[in-house]
Image (cartoon, rainbow, N blue to C red; front, side, top):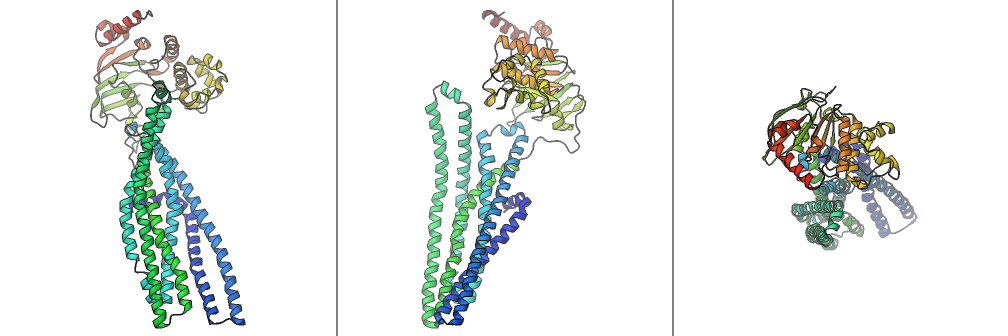
Length: 583
């Protein structure tokens, strides 16, 4: 009931459509109740004998039946179409709302989630709301009203026969409750398996190059097949229970019909029950048991819908662990100073990543972070953008704690260039201009020139209108990195974060990227993560991170002179370059 209440609040914005659809449903039910009465009345007239007056009444009843059947067409159209219209608008709203919620969740939320499963919740599970609001709820209203209306009519015709008709109902209701409890876990498991299948497909299609390179096509097909049939088996478990429940309801309903026919015959023999009454009962009997028999289908559909609704609401009800304070103010006129004041950080598993990190970077300076893989360098940069919250300590930008300013204004002043550069499946110009939608082509070209990518773009088939493909597959690694740098430059943010911007490029491309970085040095605050020390040789301050702590601080020359961790890293890289014939 709690879940249904939440769902009803989501659907409230379309209450006008639902009200009209429900009224049409009630009208349809009224027509269905009136038609058998008119038919039984005609049967009674024929039984008593037909004369001229009777023919006139039969003619009037015939016209009435035509009107009733036309009304049934109109009511059914309004009921079906308006309910579907409201339901599909609700599905559209919920898809957008669910996506928007996911888009705003902190990065930690996604650590144990599969992209394909989340996509399944947005696309597949939200679709079940259409089933609930366009089919199940209207049909339930129709069935309840029809059942009550037919019961009232039957009681008015012959109360003894009506009570016999009701005999199987408690058994049907009890079996429905048992069925609901048994079947929903299987439908929920089925939709979970569908999410896992979507996740596997998403992973494999994204990694098709690796699959083919290592000759794992057969293995991955087996894995997809296994996920596929896990979903099918879970669905078949639910359908197996349904396959027992549906015939059971039909059997019990048939027993009711047998009881009515048998008892009706007895009443006809003992009390002289008329043919008109028996015909009325026979005509209404199908209307009476149809809602009860339909309960089986409705319960199955409802359990499936509720299982999907639970998965959607699990996303919508997930708390925002990182959000603006009620009194948060915009961060304005940012110059770009960054301060870490005794910052600790650990993920949800409690394992510390950063321990008592403190430093201060002046505006327009270049701060470099170096150290082994996994020591928390990338996490440190993500803390600046407030993708995570520190476990202890404070982070300040221009002397203001980032926890006291709005996240939107904070992130507007930071432009990231990540190691795994993500480009959208659009044109080069669209990807550079993504961070600044109002930018002109001249602005985009100026940013591309500053990032040393302009000449490469002009050499492409369609220049700035060249489509880059999914995730930028049509560009080289170095080109993608420089497009990302151009995007960051175009945004004109006072802080730029470079996360391994030269990690996977050749020496020539690295030099081009270094020129691009040198071009913005002194104009923006740059926080750069690098394994190649040549990239950050000219940094104003280098932090050496080891075991989550700041092990050393200084310029390149100062740290080399110290003979510590940084000096050893520099010595190793210099020796490696010499052996490769590069130095």
